[in-house]
Length: 470
Image 1 (cartoon, one colour):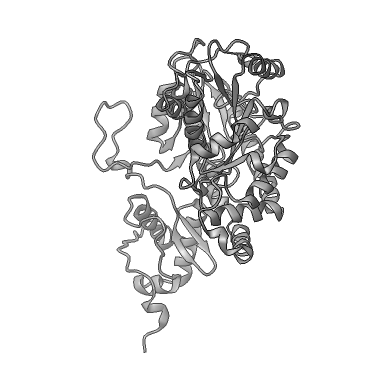
Image 2: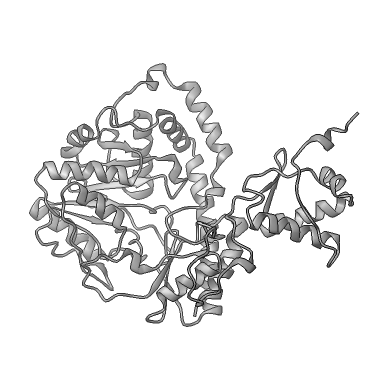
């Protein structure tokens, strides 16, 4: 009779070397198989007993090699799931890489993704609260009325709109009620709807910040709207005179990507402008829950709910893949915006009901508090490491959010990004976010998303960053 452990798992082509002992040889062979993508991310490895039998070595040797690679982040081990290849990109072995500065074109077959990513815009997806989310989903589905599974109200499920109204008032100082909240599949979806509504109202220009995501400018331009840049200075975006704009798009709590809050005088100025001219303020509160050093900067919407459209999402607090966002609308725009969204352009009812349960049960608050503590520790580690290892680099914009701005000596932005690519590290420069018509002087800086890597990759990503900084 064949033992069950001998028939479970996959065959591996491994040739452990004798140099340094069997354990080191096996560790090197497994690491090389993962690095070169012969073992794909997510692959379940044989048990230590099965692999030991295949290789004719001691089971403890395999177990120790597995443990070493789990500690390094190449493998993961969970009870009931076995040992698997970690979800990380493959990079070519050193012998196939073209050295930096050699001038040769990249070889075919080089990886499309780096080993580490410090790109901004994402939380730590490995920390998504799966167990709590699953509990909320079960409770929500068990108690949902059958008619909730129909097309329903284009504004979204009343359970979620009610939960959001209470949460946003309590945490962000937003003044609203469920009737003026509209659920979307994210900020881009909300902005696309808003562009349609603004164009229908006769708006021709939406002024935007000198630094921001060009994809969002593109969505407004697709609606036929011009998107000139507002000036930027030490007080943040200059909102005093938006010209002939009918609306302005701002990130007032934590400017992306510069990382500064909009100065109180500028907050008051843009609201005064909207009241005086009949203009509208589009407030993107993309990471308002993550503030570390002092009291949170409240939502601009609280100053004038009739002139400010407030946008929020679960993309930074939970995960962008949930495709859940919300708009808090001035009452005068609520009906037109719901009509622009349309009854068939809906968001998953089950996800809406789950988020509503997640909010009302307190699980969302608990998750955000835990994430805030974790990201603050990462922020502190980033600031300390850069200060110690790259004293010519200045870390700014870190009072809040999930990213930091690393200001570089003049002329070094692109060379640092290129060097990082050779280290297997994805970085983004500030120049990628600069509006083409911005009047401000270009700055050399990196926009570092310190929340992005999973815990298993954080130390490696931070070390790789410090190695390429001047």
